[in-house]
Image (tube, rainbow, N blue to C red; front, side, top):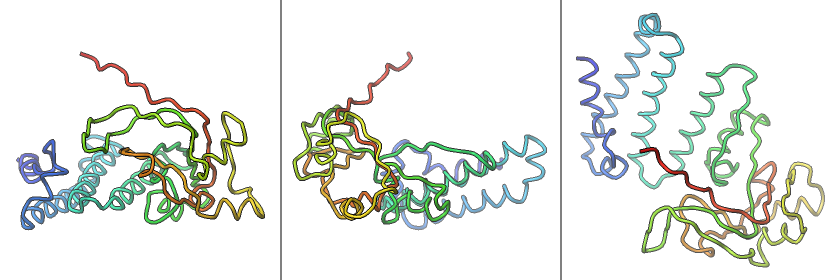
Length: 247
């Protein structure tokens, strides 16, 4: 009965298109969902000993965090377009995973450059504040080649392959390409003098995310020396190759 009530109260979050349908609900409906989430986590706290004894302390921790993720989803759906809400949640979940695995745990976290960078209110900035130098942000740059992204053009053909030629001459990628190496790892923390000043200066750079429309739209000034601890430059890149789904 308790499970049934929780499912009914949280049903608006479980819909397939909740990200688009939830913001259109009336304020009182969304308030009811938030109240149900608060009540759910309160029950987890109140019954921790009993539920842990029935399952295990680890299973209780996992389930309780699932309830927290539902709270994060509600906050995200309530603020469509505010990507910083999502980044704050991602940073919180990374920290939870590290604590869950115990002292000495190391993690490799993959995300688009924007999320791992240490600017604005992105996930990387939150992790640097929380973890200090234990968090190392590594960005990726490429000169030419293919990648996959969602089509941001008016046609919106879904996830597809895009291919770009050599980076424009004035971009950061073109400067790295002139080194003539197919693969570079650059420790930005070791930069000194004029090199550091140049890396810390805003330079046009192509930063692709989940959605691509045009090369011009994805190019903007970036201060890579301040955004990342290191960058990996790839001269030529290929798309992530899709694998077939099981029947």
